[in-house]
Length: 506
Image (cartoon, rainbow, N blue to C red; front, side, top):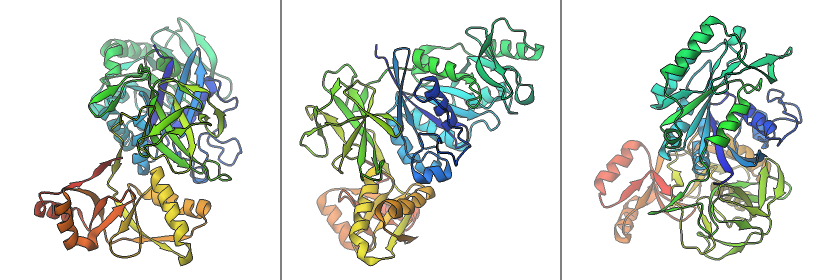
C-alpha cells in the first residue's frame, strides 16, 4: 500500500482555499509561520502564490506543488488556480491528482466555479472530500448546505461532524467519530487543541446533529473512492477548525496513486518502469535564471536522480540530473521519487505539456487536451524591431499553456487565443516583466478556432478556398479561424469529410 497521497483543493475564488492550503502545510510541519493571507503587503504572504501578478491580485494564477510529511505519509498538494479564466491549467492539474478537497463557503454554498471544477473531477471519477469553511461566521444552515451539495452535484453526502452554533453563536465543532467538541480559545476564538469529550450541547444543536447522523448515508469507502459519495467536514480554516480532521481523512480514506490511462491500457503504479506525464510547464520561476520547469506526475516505478527518461515529443533520452521536489519557491533536490510524486524537471523548452516520459518509450498517456479558445486577439508590437523576442515569448507562454498562439496563413499579425479574459492581462504583464516586450492586444476578426482533420487532398482543397481564415498552431497543425459559431456549423455542413475539433489531444 503506497504512502503517497496526491491531492488538490478546488473552490470558488475567496472561499478560503489559500488559507486552508497554508493551514494544512502548517499542520504538516512544512511552514512554521502562517502568513495571514489578508496582510497582502507583508513579506511573509502565502508562500504558494509567488508570481508578481498573484501578489498584486492575491489569487493563485500558477499551480504550485507543495510536499509535506506527517505520520509516515507523504502528501503532495497541488495548488489549482481558483480563477475561472484558468480552467485549462486547472483541468490539467486535476489530471495529475488522485483525490480533491472541495472548499465551500458556508454563507454562499456552491458557486459556479466550484461546479465547473467539480465537473472536471467527475470526468475522471476523482474522489472528493467536502470542507464547509467559515462556519464561525453567519451562513446557511448545515442541512441546507448538505442538500445543496447533494442536489447540485448529484452526490451522496455523509456528514462527519456538525457545527455547534454558527456565526455569533459558534462554540466549536462536534466530531461524530470521537464524539468530542473542538472548542474556540482566546480572544481570537481559534482552535488551539482543546477538545471536550461528552460536552453538553445546546438542545437545538444536539437534535440537529442526531438528525444529520441518521438522515444521511454512513461513510462508505468504496462509494467515496468511486466518486459517488462525499464525506462532509465543517470548520474554519482561518481559525484552525477541521484542519486536522481533513489531513486525517486524506491519510485514511483518500486513494493511493491510481492507474493512469494510456490509450487502451491502464498503467499501474506497481509497474517497474519509471513512467510519468508532464501536466504543466512553468517559465521563469526564478526570474534571474530564465528557467523553465516541467512538472511531471510520476505514474509508476522508482525514480533515481540522474536517470535517463525519453520524452514522447523528442524521441531521444534525456538525463535528469537535478530534479526538484517542491515546497513552493524553496526547492530541494530529490534523490528518489515514487509513483504519485510530482517532480520538477528544469529544461530549456524540450519538454511540453502532454509529453509522456518513460524509460522504454513504449507508452503514451492520454487525456490532456487543449481547448478551443473563446477569446482571440491580435498582438501588435509597440516596437517592430522586437519581433524575434515576441515570437520567443509567445512560444514559451503557449508551451506553458497560458495562451495558445496561431500564425495566420495570410497576414503578418499573430493571434493569441485564451479561454478567459484574465489570461490576457497575465500575458501582457508577463511579456513586459519577463521578456521586455511591450505589446497591445487588438480585437481579431475571429470569434473561435477549430482544429482541422482530414485526408491531405480534402484539406488541400479546403485550404485553397479558405486561406484567409486559416492559421497554423505552434505544432504546425491547421486551424480554421471562425468569425462566429454559426460559421463553424456552416463549414461543417459544407465539408462533411473534414472534422472541426474543439479540443486537441496534446
